[in-house]
Amino acid sequence: MGFGDYPKEYNPAVHGPYDPARYYGKPDTPFGQVKLNELGSWFGRRNKTPSAFMGACSRAWWRWQHKYVQPKRVGMAPFFQLLVGSMAFFYVINYGKIKHHRNYKYH
Amino acid sequence: MLSRIALRSVAGRQSATTALVARGSATDAVGERDEKNFPRPVRGEPGKVRLGFVPEEWFQFFHSKTGVTGPYTFGVGLATYLCSKEIYVMEHEYYTGLSIFVMVYYATTRFGPKIAQWLDKEVDAVENNWNEGRVENVKFLEQSIEEEKAAQWRAQGQELLIEAKKENVLLQLEAAYRERLMSAYTEVKRRLDYQLEKSNMERRIAQKHMVEWIVANVMKAITPDQEKQTLDRCIADLSALAAKK
Image (cartoon, rainbow over all chains, first blue to last red; front, top):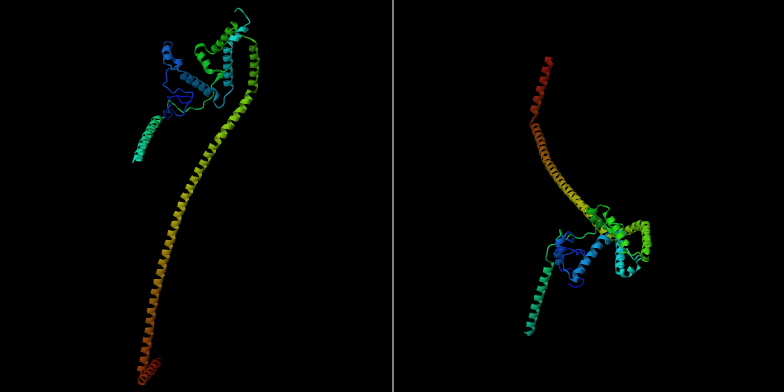
């Protein structure tokens, strides 16, 4: 599977039009329903190659797109979400510099 | 000879590769469409959010454990902790952010609804524009179907009309047949009448001639003696009659 290809498991004859937000492989237990003692084996079953990680990120991105950006009449929510997310991201990457602006020595 | 062998080998190779390709594509396209587990994706409604950006699911996640105020309490508590321990540092950019927040809030509440209305109108316009051709086509096809049905109805009317015309022709044929029957009857009657008249006439003429011939012969047969006798006899009768008186 190279760049820009469909996932190996995707079969147009069976699955119909390609949905980029969907995982076409064999479904495992959803993360929200995993018991704590099964968590290790659940992570052990995960595919941890870079391409699989990129695929997961891509599906998450498209799920967000389909839910908040692509509907017909969207409000400001996706823009605010992007704004808040980027604010948090830049706050975290700049935290080392911001730390020096603390006003109090003892808390 | 050699060229023919070369050709044959090429043909064999080609058929082998095409067979392989065909088999490969067949395995690729095989499988039945699974509509139940993989339905065609539809464009949904936008996800619900609270406070402008926090997904509704986050509040639902808290709701079963902490009630309605739980997520807000959690948020405020976390913010208080971060600020109090100065993990979140309120440097100069924080106040810039506050003022920007105020401006964004004002702009959103003040102009948001109007802009949303205008954008919705634009969305509808774009969608209508894209759908227009299809809708027009459907309308045209429906109209064509209507016209076709009307044409079929008219064709049925034509059948009725032709039926009536055929009946009319049959009636005319019947009338002509009866007319001819009538004329044949009258012609025959005329000829018979003529024959009757002719035989009557012949009999009358024959009778007349016979009478004339008999009278003539009788007159010829009367002699002057007979005439005189008759006259005498008449006078005698007259005198007898007179004597009787």
